[in-house]
Image (cartoon, rainbow, N blue to C red; front, top):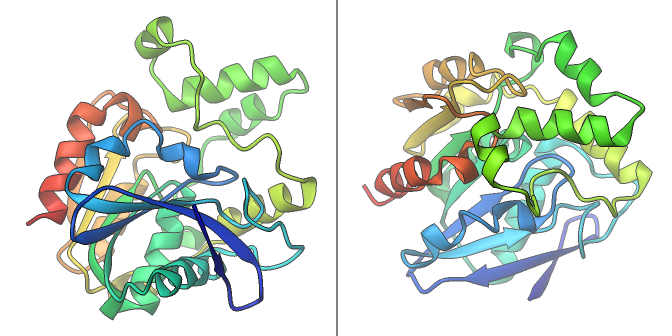
Length: 259
């Protein structure tokens, strides 16, 4: 385990695993820590040195009052690579992690070997928002019902019938309220539309075709906007495609990043 220091002095927890020569940074979703990647991460460890980390506000990282924006989170990724002494890496971000990865690739094109943007959105006026019914299901006062609604957005009924947890993609419950609000605001205010054409890394856009949590219609918008990007929709998959459909997603990502 290691800690990196950001430009504004925050301490970020990160872990490095795997035996490959190339580095792959895995960026988790909103209000989640590095455990987001627990299930699919071993798929990449044989080929890469994989890096996972706790976003500011989560896990063992500092939880400052400020610094919560997708572009700011991208600067945090740079701080971790600087701490490692790594100049160039592959980057794979999912959900809000994909928003962060957009900024990192646009702001630091020379530092990205290959890029994967998973189940994410360009945000802003061009992004496709989830339906109002999705928001209502997550805002229920009954915590158990809200959790059940989130599970159904992440995974298919068939998966949930045979997998009973623990689930590592439902958020870091230990986050303080100000950090949770910061993550929500960062994701909501993300607008990478003008940055997407600045991305020069070979890019794969991947999305669950049945994702309504972050609607799958966002995937072709991003793929059309990033020069020469490839698009792959995984039939039947919901938001956590990288876990439930890892038998499809992980080989797809590996093939893209290894050329």
